[in-house]
Length: 286
Image 1: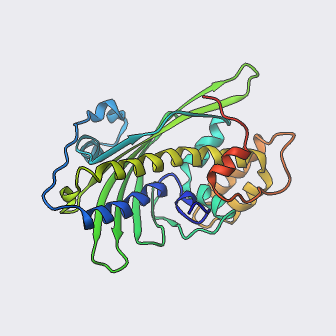
Image 2 (image 1 turned 45 degrees about the horizontal axis):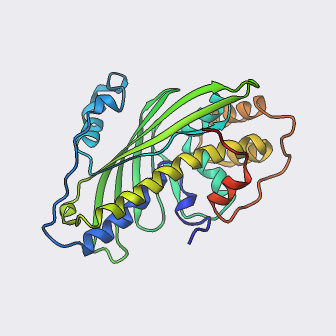
């Protein structure tokens, strides 16, 4: 099913929660004793370690270096002012609120600190994450994920490092564009994960690939909707309690600054799913 209330309705971080359900199913049904190998990755080649606070360097490096699963999405380019893009990436509460205003979703998030959040998808998956690095060109998030099966007989714990790389340029008509990609490293900490059979590993990897792809598309889609429907975006952001008053005011100012002459006074039409919304928006350039 691909309706708006399923995995498509999650934020960039919330998208990764979906992998836990598949992990749990695989752990339950895989043959015992099957091993899975993976190649080591040099963390310094993935993130700027010198910019990451000292207390987080080893936790981030461990997940990248000793990951169980890894996927990097394709680069995605779309028209958007850099400041508006960064506002949406930096404030997941507003980004998710915009989507939830268009479609029912059980996903919930709560701010627990200046750079930290926690959330759940209403189906047994929960996460606590923190922005380890926020800069115009790279965002690094460290998350602790948990999945508990409906009967409580399966529990999966994992850590995720989510990396968003971004670049900015202008087209010949001077219109600003953003190009970004999303990369995820997942390290399963639960005992028994090695029981995942080699035949099931591709299934989990395909799921993670889809999650990473949709996370990148989700952000680009939200930026398009904000630019096209600025009044709606501002009204939704002003009602979001998990965003600070300062954040709401900054977002309101940014939306007003980048309002286009042909912007709509109304609200978006609710689409059946994210792919339909993508098709209805302007063609992207790569």
